[in-house]
Figure 1 (spheres, one colour):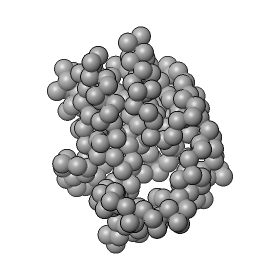
Figure 2 (cartoon, one colour):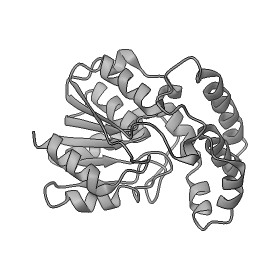
Figure 3 (cartoon, helix red, strand yellow):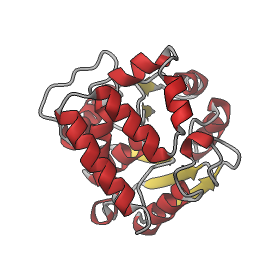
Length: 245
């Protein structure tokens, strides 16, 4: 099984999950391109990230299950649509922005992040993302004093790449319709986290419904009461059940 990390993750977020799954699966938890010790050869393209996954699949024996969290879920879906040798796919809280009410905010975010990225203003990239999701200014100010701030800023350039993976947050209906594998789409249900207060409470459910509508073999599962960073023990049980069916 390959675990594909999401936004601002260098593999650390999925590490507890990898340990729990290791009793039943051979698990590959990697730092995506431009994260951790992984390379970042320009120019960036989603196809390069798919090639990275394909290289891991080849190392794993030629076919694997794949679990993708957040933007990593979008990457897993893009890889399957491109023909990667994936057996089954599970995705968590894929953040496609579904609904005309969201487009103006996300389009402005994309424009602002492009400008900040071109100017090399990584700290601004992080702040723009936190404001997009609804992080209060007080939390952003407090975050600057926290030890994790520097590591998050170091990964902020990947926010621009994740927007590309997410097709500018528009669901790539035609590509996802090519997926023939079984897909499990998991969400946290109604959003309750203060740092995501800028999003509709059904933000991830909207996306999950749209994914399920275009992928031919899809099941839905909701983990009510979970935040965007899901409890590893709970996710391990869900994935073990799905991948062993």
